[in-house]
Amino acid sequence: MSIDPARPPRHEVVPRAIVVDDELDTLGTASLALRAAGFEVTVAASGAAALQGLRDTEFDLVVVGNHDVPVIVVGAGREQRAAPSVLAVGRLRIDLPRHEVAVGERPLDVTASEFRVLALLASSPGTVFTRRQIMEHVWGGAYFGDGHPVDTHVLNLRRKIETDPTRPRRLLTVRGVGFKLVAPPCEPVDDPDETLIGR
Image 1 (cartoon, rainbow, N blue to C red):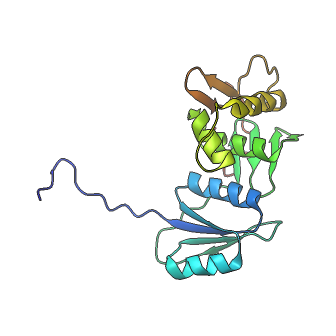
Image 2: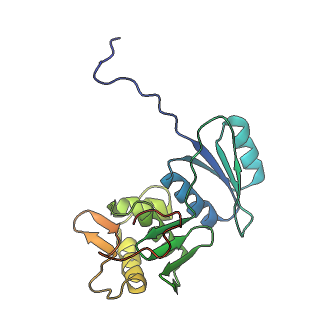
Image 3: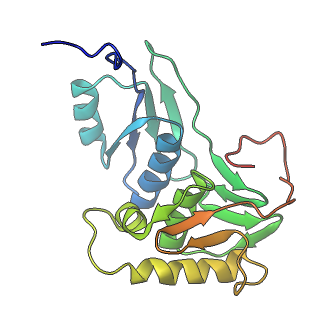
């Protein structure tokens, strides 16, 4: 078998993380942050499942939830990368461990599924996510239906994060494709020392 010299084989090592918690919301938000940081993520809903996973696979990072603040255990042997605990796009901030959303100093009341939609979009500001991608991420499994629940969630989120929901500047529609989250022009980030994604 010949190897094309123009396409050399790649041996990139992807760091692995396992998240352990019996709360589905915690599993989802922690997994999102780790994937945004470049980890391949395994989730375990019980200690027994986690132990089985640890026996079968070498992990670089173990995140164990205690229902308040995750306990992070870092493995050895491969290069480590820190996952952000707060995602921010302009003045919009999503605190993953605390499951909180705010615009500047104004806290927002969002549902669990709205939080997951917002956190997904904030994990890669400016990237367009299709309705299919959002459905599969938020509700899990294969995609079914016409995407109407996504449109409803986007409409509800705009009422909460936009100054004028009829003229959105943060949560934008890319017609025929999907949705993206951006920072409005000239909007400052509140805390330049915070670990953030998307300025």
